Amino acid sequence: MERKCLSSLGIRLGPNKVSVGGILQPVTDGMKLFVKEFAIPANAAKIFLVVPSISLLLCFVGWQLFPSSGFSASGSNDILFFLVVTSLNAHVAIMSGWASNSKYARVGSVRGFAQVISYEICLSITLVIVIFLSGGVSFFSSSENGWSLWWGLAWLPIILSWMTICLAETNRAPFDMVEAESELVSGFNVEYSAGGFAVLFIAEYGMIMLMCTVTTWSFLQNPKVWAVSGVVWMFLKIGALMFFFIWVRASLPRLRYDLLMLMCWVSLLPAVLGVYGFITYAMKM
Image (cartoon, rainbow, N blue to C red; front, side, top):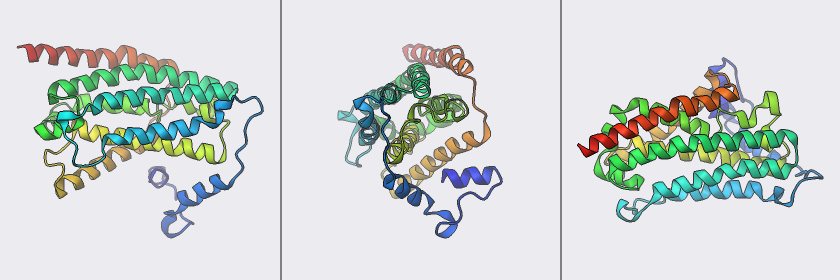
Protein backbone atom coordinates (compact mmCIF):
# COMPACT_ATOMS: atom_id res chain seq x y z
CA MET A 1 0.00 0.00 0.00
CA GLU A 2 2.76 2.44 0.93
CA ARG A 3 4.86 1.86 -2.19
CA LYS A 4 1.89 2.17 -4.53
CA CYS A 5 0.60 5.29 -2.77
CA LEU A 6 4.04 6.93 -2.70
CA SER A 7 4.55 6.25 -6.40
CA SER A 8 1.12 7.68 -7.25
CA LEU A 9 1.71 10.77 -5.11
CA GLY A 10 5.08 11.23 -6.81
CA ILE A 11 3.61 10.63 -10.30
CA ARG A 12 5.65 7.43 -10.77
CA LEU A 13 4.79 3.84 -11.62
CA GLY A 14 6.07 2.10 -8.50
CA PRO A 15 6.23 -1.71 -8.28
CA ASN A 16 4.23 -3.13 -11.20
CA LYS A 17 6.10 -6.21 -12.49
CA VAL A 18 5.38 -8.97 -9.94
CA SER A 19 1.86 -10.42 -10.43
CA VAL A 20 -1.08 -8.12 -11.19
CA GLY A 21 -0.15 -4.49 -10.55
CA GLY A 22 2.83 -5.50 -8.41
CA ILE A 23 0.63 -6.74 -5.54
CA LEU A 24 3.01 -9.59 -4.66
CA GLN A 25 6.13 -7.38 -4.64
CA PRO A 26 6.29 -7.30 -0.77
CA VAL A 27 6.05 -11.12 -0.69
CA THR A 28 8.99 -11.53 -3.04
CA ASP A 29 11.00 -8.89 -1.16
CA GLY A 30 10.33 -10.70 2.12
CA MET A 31 11.33 -14.06 0.66
CA LYS A 32 14.55 -12.53 -0.69
CA LEU A 33 15.44 -11.04 2.71
CA PHE A 34 14.81 -14.24 4.66
CA VAL A 35 16.83 -16.32 2.20
CA LYS A 36 19.89 -14.04 2.29
CA GLU A 37 22.73 -14.53 4.76
CA PHE A 38 22.38 -12.75 8.11
CA ALA A 39 25.74 -11.03 8.65
CA ILE A 40 26.79 -10.22 12.22
CA PRO A 41 29.32 -7.40 12.77
CA ALA A 42 32.57 -8.55 14.33
CA ASN A 43 32.33 -6.16 17.30
CA ALA A 44 28.60 -6.55 17.89
CA ALA A 45 27.29 -7.39 21.36
CA LYS A 46 25.54 -10.69 22.02
CA ILE A 47 22.17 -8.97 22.34
CA PHE A 48 22.47 -8.00 18.65
CA LEU A 49 20.68 -11.21 17.61
CA VAL A 50 17.85 -10.77 20.11
CA VAL A 51 16.81 -7.17 19.35
CA PRO A 52 14.66 -7.95 16.25
CA SER A 53 12.80 -10.63 18.22
CA ILE A 54 12.18 -8.21 21.11
CA SER A 55 10.85 -5.61 18.67
CA LEU A 56 8.46 -8.09 17.05
CA LEU A 57 7.40 -9.43 20.46
CA LEU A 58 6.48 -5.92 21.68
CA CYS A 59 4.46 -5.39 18.51
CA PHE A 60 2.51 -8.63 19.07
CA VAL A 61 2.02 -7.86 22.76
CA GLY A 62 0.58 -4.46 21.86
CA TRP A 63 -2.03 -6.10 19.63
CA GLN A 64 -3.35 -8.03 22.63
CA LEU A 65 -5.34 -4.89 23.41
CA PHE A 66 -7.93 -5.85 20.79
CA PRO A 67 -8.45 -9.61 20.98
CA SER A 68 -12.22 -10.09 20.63
CA SER A 69 -15.65 -8.61 21.14
CA GLY A 70 -15.94 -10.34 24.51
CA PHE A 71 -13.81 -7.76 26.29
CA SER A 72 -15.56 -5.24 28.50
CA ALA A 73 -14.40 -1.91 29.85
CA SER A 74 -15.31 -2.83 33.39
CA GLY A 75 -12.38 -5.18 34.01
CA SER A 76 -9.76 -3.91 31.60
CA ASN A 77 -6.89 -1.43 31.97
CA ASP A 78 -5.76 -1.54 28.36
CA ILE A 79 -4.87 2.18 28.12
CA LEU A 80 -2.29 1.68 30.87
CA PHE A 81 -1.11 -1.50 29.14
CA PHE A 82 -0.71 0.44 25.88
CA LEU A 83 1.42 3.08 27.63
CA VAL A 84 3.67 0.35 29.03
CA VAL A 85 4.15 -1.23 25.58
CA THR A 86 4.94 2.08 23.85
CA SER A 87 7.44 3.03 26.56
CA LEU A 88 9.19 -0.33 26.23
CA ASN A 89 9.27 0.05 22.45
CA ALA A 90 11.61 3.03 22.88
CA HIS A 91 14.28 0.66 24.21
CA VAL A 92 14.46 -1.27 20.91
CA ALA A 93 16.26 1.59 19.15
CA ILE A 94 18.74 2.19 21.96
CA MET A 95 19.47 -1.56 22.30
CA SER A 96 20.03 -2.05 18.57
CA GLY A 97 22.28 1.00 18.33
CA TRP A 98 24.38 -0.06 21.32
CA ALA A 99 24.58 -3.71 20.24
CA SER A 100 25.61 -2.83 16.68
CA ASN A 101 28.73 -1.00 17.92
CA SER A 102 28.50 1.38 14.97
CA LYS A 103 28.68 5.18 15.07
CA TYR A 104 25.77 5.64 12.67
CA ALA A 105 23.59 3.19 14.57
CA ARG A 106 24.54 4.74 17.91
CA VAL A 107 23.66 8.28 16.81
CA GLY A 108 20.34 7.08 15.40
CA SER A 109 19.48 5.18 18.57
CA VAL A 110 20.25 8.14 20.85
CA ARG A 111 18.15 10.39 18.63
CA GLY A 112 15.27 7.95 18.68
CA PHE A 113 15.39 7.42 22.44
CA ALA A 114 15.31 11.16 23.19
CA GLN A 115 12.55 11.70 20.62
CA VAL A 116 10.29 8.92 21.86
CA ILE A 117 10.71 9.88 25.53
CA SER A 118 9.85 13.51 24.74
CA TYR A 119 6.73 12.72 22.75
CA GLU A 120 5.74 9.97 25.20
CA ILE A 121 4.88 12.71 27.71
CA CYS A 122 2.43 14.34 25.28
CA LEU A 123 0.97 10.95 24.37
CA SER A 124 0.41 10.04 28.04
CA ILE A 125 -1.28 13.35 28.87
CA THR A 126 -3.56 13.03 25.83
CA LEU A 127 -4.60 9.55 26.92
CA VAL A 128 -5.31 10.90 30.42
CA ILE A 129 -7.77 13.32 28.75
CA VAL A 130 -9.35 10.31 27.03
CA ILE A 131 -9.64 8.58 30.42
CA PHE A 132 -11.32 11.63 31.98
CA LEU A 133 -13.91 12.04 29.24
CA SER A 134 -14.67 8.36 28.66
CA GLY A 135 -14.96 7.51 32.35
CA GLY A 136 -12.65 4.48 32.31
CA VAL A 137 -9.09 3.30 31.71
CA SER A 138 -10.12 1.17 28.75
CA PHE A 139 -10.46 1.88 25.05
CA PHE A 140 -13.69 -0.09 25.20
CA SER A 141 -15.26 2.33 27.68
CA SER A 142 -15.49 5.05 25.04
CA SER A 143 -17.43 2.85 22.64
CA GLU A 144 -19.68 1.49 25.38
CA ASN A 145 -20.50 5.00 26.60
CA GLY A 146 -21.12 6.31 23.10
CA TRP A 147 -18.70 9.12 23.84
CA SER A 148 -15.90 9.15 21.32
CA LEU A 149 -18.00 9.97 18.24
CA TRP A 150 -18.86 13.52 19.32
CA TRP A 151 -15.43 13.81 20.95
CA GLY A 152 -13.75 13.13 17.63
CA LEU A 153 -15.87 15.68 15.79
CA ALA A 154 -15.68 18.43 18.43
CA TRP A 155 -11.96 18.17 19.24
CA LEU A 156 -10.40 17.96 15.79
CA PRO A 157 -7.29 20.03 16.81
CA ILE A 158 -6.55 17.52 19.57
CA ILE A 159 -6.78 14.68 17.04
CA LEU A 160 -4.30 16.48 14.78
CA SER A 161 -1.96 16.94 17.75
CA TRP A 162 -2.41 13.26 18.58
CA MET A 163 -1.57 12.25 15.00
CA THR A 164 1.58 14.39 15.16
CA ILE A 165 2.55 12.57 18.35
CA CYS A 166 1.86 9.22 16.65
CA LEU A 167 4.15 10.17 13.74
CA ALA A 168 6.94 10.97 16.20
CA GLU A 169 6.30 7.85 18.30
CA THR A 170 6.56 5.56 15.28
CA ASN A 171 9.60 7.43 13.85
CA ARG A 172 7.81 8.28 10.63
CA ALA A 173 8.49 11.18 8.26
CA PRO A 174 8.86 14.08 8.85
CA PHE A 175 10.11 12.83 12.26
CA ASP A 176 12.25 9.93 11.00
CA MET A 177 15.47 11.23 12.50
CA VAL A 178 16.22 7.72 13.74
CA GLU A 179 16.57 6.38 10.20
CA ALA A 180 17.71 9.54 8.38
CA GLU A 181 19.15 7.86 5.29
CA SER A 182 20.78 11.07 4.03
CA GLU A 183 22.74 11.39 7.28
CA LEU A 184 22.92 8.00 9.01
CA VAL A 185 22.59 5.55 6.06
CA SER A 186 19.76 3.71 7.83
CA GLY A 187 20.08 4.79 11.44
CA PHE A 188 19.74 2.35 14.32
CA ASN A 189 19.21 -0.67 12.03
CA VAL A 190 22.10 0.02 9.66
CA GLU A 191 23.98 -3.15 10.67
CA TYR A 192 20.96 -5.44 10.30
CA SER A 193 20.51 -7.41 7.12
CA ALA A 194 18.44 -10.27 5.72
CA GLY A 195 15.90 -11.67 8.19
CA GLY A 196 16.83 -9.33 11.05
CA PHE A 197 16.08 -6.27 8.94
CA ALA A 198 12.81 -7.82 7.74
CA VAL A 199 11.68 -8.51 11.32
CA LEU A 200 12.46 -4.93 12.37
CA PHE A 201 10.55 -3.73 9.31
CA ILE A 202 7.51 -5.87 10.15
CA ALA A 203 7.54 -4.66 13.77
CA GLU A 204 7.73 -1.02 12.67
CA TYR A 205 4.70 -1.30 10.41
CA GLY A 206 2.87 -3.37 13.00
CA MET A 207 3.28 -0.50 15.49
CA ILE A 208 1.99 1.96 12.87
CA MET A 209 -1.15 -0.15 12.39
CA LEU A 210 -1.50 -0.42 16.18
CA MET A 211 -1.34 3.37 16.58
CA CYS A 212 -4.00 3.79 13.86
CA THR A 213 -6.24 1.28 15.67
CA VAL A 214 -5.73 3.00 19.03
CA THR A 215 -6.54 6.35 17.41
CA THR A 216 -9.77 4.95 16.01
CA TRP A 217 -10.80 3.46 19.36
CA SER A 218 -9.88 6.59 21.31
CA PHE A 219 -11.29 9.36 19.13
CA LEU A 220 -13.34 8.09 16.20
CA GLN A 221 -15.21 5.06 17.45
CA ASN A 222 -18.81 4.22 16.68
CA PRO A 223 -20.94 3.24 19.73
CA LYS A 224 -22.25 0.21 17.78
CA VAL A 225 -18.73 -1.06 17.20
CA TRP A 226 -19.50 -4.78 17.18
CA ALA A 227 -22.33 -4.50 14.66
CA VAL A 228 -21.41 -5.34 11.05
CA SER A 229 -21.66 -1.71 9.98
CA GLY A 230 -19.54 -0.64 12.98
CA VAL A 231 -16.77 -3.10 12.11
CA VAL A 232 -16.77 -1.96 8.47
CA TRP A 233 -16.57 1.68 9.49
CA MET A 234 -13.79 0.87 11.95
CA PHE A 235 -11.64 -0.75 9.25
CA LEU A 236 -12.31 2.15 6.87
CA LYS A 237 -11.16 4.64 9.52
CA ILE A 238 -8.02 2.59 10.24
CA GLY A 239 -7.26 2.46 6.50
CA ALA A 240 -7.73 6.23 6.19
CA LEU A 241 -5.35 6.82 9.10
CA MET A 242 -2.74 4.52 7.55
CA PHE A 243 -3.04 6.51 4.32
CA PHE A 244 -2.47 9.65 6.41
CA PHE A 245 0.91 8.26 7.50
CA ILE A 246 1.84 7.60 3.86
CA TRP A 247 0.54 10.95 2.64
CA VAL A 248 2.58 12.84 5.26
CA ARG A 249 5.72 10.95 4.23
CA ALA A 250 5.18 11.89 0.58
CA SER A 251 4.33 15.53 1.28
CA LEU A 252 6.49 16.94 4.09
CA PRO A 253 10.28 17.28 4.29
CA ARG A 254 12.24 15.96 7.25
CA LEU A 255 12.57 18.40 10.15
CA ARG A 256 15.86 19.40 11.68
CA TYR A 257 16.43 17.55 14.93
CA ASP A 258 16.48 20.70 17.08
CA LEU A 259 13.19 21.86 15.54
CA LEU A 260 11.71 18.43 16.19
CA MET A 261 12.50 18.64 19.90
CA LEU A 262 11.42 22.28 20.13
CA MET A 263 8.06 21.47 18.58
CA CYS A 264 7.47 18.95 21.36
CA TRP A 265 8.57 21.02 24.36
CA VAL A 266 7.52 24.49 23.14
CA SER A 267 4.36 23.81 21.10
CA LEU A 268 2.75 20.41 21.65
CA LEU A 269 3.34 19.98 25.38
CA PRO A 270 1.95 23.42 26.41
CA ALA A 271 -1.07 22.89 24.13
CA VAL A 272 -1.83 19.44 25.55
CA LEU A 273 -1.34 20.69 29.13
CA GLY A 274 -3.66 23.62 28.41
CA VAL A 275 -6.41 21.29 27.18
CA TYR A 276 -5.84 19.03 30.19
CA GLY A 277 -6.18 21.97 32.57
CA PHE A 278 -9.30 23.26 30.82
CA ILE A 279 -11.01 19.86 30.95
CA THR A 280 -10.03 19.40 34.62
CA TYR A 281 -11.45 22.83 35.47
CA ALA A 282 -14.63 22.17 33.46
CA MET A 283 -15.21 18.86 35.23
CA LYS A 284 -14.98 20.55 38.64
CA MET A 285 -17.60 23.13 37.71
